[in-house]
Image 1 (tube, one colour):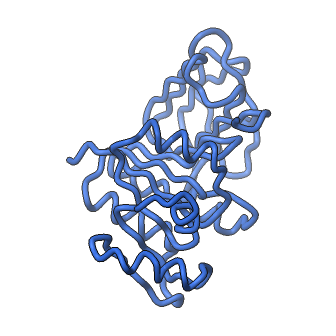
Image 2 (cartoon, rainbow, N blue to C red; image 1 turned 120 degrees about the vertical axis):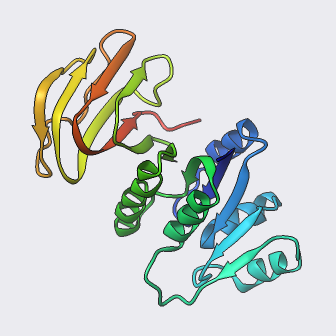
Length: 222
């Protein structure tokens, strides 16, 4: 597996300070621009390594400018298709064997797109590849095994769990303000919203299912 980190910038809300900080920390990352996410690269005069989308929501002069850079692969799709642009980008990253995936611009005002992007995280999760959506208030992952949340490293002061695709059985939460023992988390259950780490570390384990894990902060990332 290629252990290189992939940063995907999609067409939702992109907080520039956050995005620039992540690109600085991941200076050797493979960069994928997804449709309107290309506007961020254009504004910052950054060359992505790969461009994908149907480009129905981006100014024609932007995509034309990048087409002049013949060394950048551009995959253009018909807007009438069976997968979102972000899903296509994530599948490309997984099939190419990259080791970690960070998605920026995966949230925003279009809740239908937000829901789709969260579910897309299950694709790398099933392949054993760490993946996350990050915005100014949230870090979102899909996990199917034990997770340890260290207070010194967590993205925000709250964490929440939601089942993805069915029940989550034998759920244990230790080291948290609201612990759980051998709980079955069902799709209509809000029990695991807004928990907090009690001490230095919280440990989440479960026997069956997949979990959406959200780490949330009250204050916007600066």
